[in-house]
Image 1 (tube, rainbow, N blue to C red):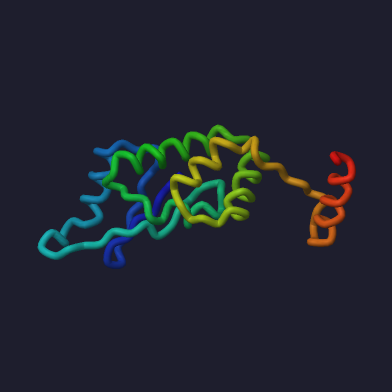
Image 2: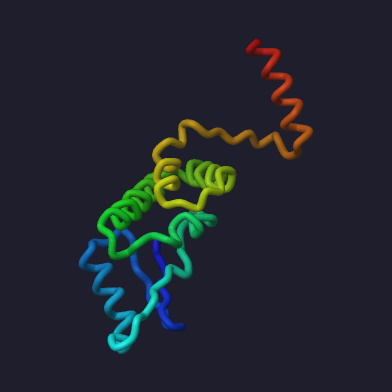
Length: 138
């Protein structure tokens, strides 16, 4: 995973996994020349096999060891997923829509709680499926 950082229209990439020292060095390179004024750094994008991951990582604190550890954990989980699991993870994030790094890590570590039903394309399909399975289990 690659995070794209931005400060005053300047950008730099940060490869994940990373260490606290590597993140600090990247941030220092980005804000070099702005030492005399406050320079706000934001995560402006993410390159990952999970297309909708950005809202979940955009507020990560790159100076926090805890958040860096979560990003590293998330990266390791994503890299260890099959393409089907990555698709499932992306769908679960889309379904949940919480936009929180902690929640993304939680979902990535509990994909067994989710399932894709490719034949369900509409609300009507979902309704029929729920009715049919309710009669089968009840």
